[in-house]
Every structure is written in C-alpha cells, then in structure tokens.
Length: 251
Image (tube, rainbow, N blue to C red):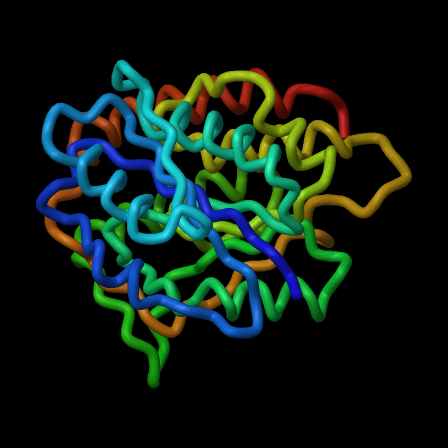
C-alpha cells in the first residue's frame, strides 16, 4: 500500500478551514496522512489543526511556525519534516480544498502505475465534462504567466501554480527543498528550476520525462485567497531572478 504525507500550509485560515472534509476523507487503497503547517497564524487556525490531531493523531499532524514565513517556507519546512516518517510520496495541497482531497488517490494511482514519474502537478484545464471554476481575470493572467514560465524554463508546462502537487520521496526530490526559496509566491517555479538545474548535463531522464501534469476533474476558486494584485508584480521580479539564477548555464 502506497503511503503519502501531504503538507497543508495554513495562514489565518479560520474562515476557510473545512475540518469536516478532512475528517470524512478516506482512501482505502492508500495510506494518506496530513501535516498541517501553521505559518504564524493570529486567528484560531492552530486550534482547528490541533482539533484534527486530537481526532486522529495518526492521520493528522501539526507543525507550528512562530512567525509568518510565507507559503514557500511553510511548504519547505513541512516537506522536510514529512521526510522523517519515510513515506513513499510527499506533496502539498491548498487548505481551501479548491482541489478536492479525492484527487490525491488519483495522483497516487498514476504515480504507482508510472514509476518513471517524480512529480505530478495538478493542472486546471477547462474541458467539457470537468468542473473547473476560475475567475476569468485569474485565468488569463495565468495563461500569460505560464507562457513566460515555459519560455524561461524551456519546458512546455500549462499550469505551475495549482496548489496540488505530489512528489516521489527520493533523495533528489528532498534536495530540492533543502535550501530556502527566494520566491515567496512562485516557489513552485523555483522547485522546477532547481530540478532542471540538478539534471542538466547528466545522463539521466530530464524534467520533461519525469514530470506529469494531471488534468483535474474538479477545481473551484475559493474566496479569501491571500494572493493580491501587488503579488503579481512581485512575481515578475521573482521570475527574472529565477531566470538569472538557474537558467544561465549552457544547455
């Protein structure tokens, strides 16, 4: 039975935290547990995650950061703590459950059937028969952003920013999280850039061969996102930094 530890970064999520959804979620064919990283919240988030831990201390764990460090650092520290439980897979998922928890077993089934894959990324592709509800302006900004990222990384990728990702638990993957990220919001891109850099020039499968974009069946935009307009401006500078830091070596 495949085991997975899913990191859930949380910052002031009292009004968006659906504890009942976590309690009722089950996947009989997999061993899935969660690590909630409370990123210096000032509301009742910590009480909510502690309540889940009391409900089922095997399935739910908590990591409390005393000060707000941002989603990138919360995920990074969570992944490194998750490593100690020796799961087959690690990942992170947005606490608002825009991507339903029921997608996690689908990710795991794919990973088990495709042992060459190291990273599975949720992709919000609006197709007939799928429920992808995203604000129109965010969709168009996302398309422009993804085009720029694809150019910078030289990697044809549709959606880097979906908050649903699964990684095969391997030393190479954990190495991607050893050092703090420069990016506060687009650390997902920095993870991919680090992976590409780690494989460059080596006689190993390259990023395009070990990353899979999983078209989600359901994704619904949940009000209350911490992402603001100014963060899109910051993302431009972070992309430039990533380009200069990770993509300057000759291909």
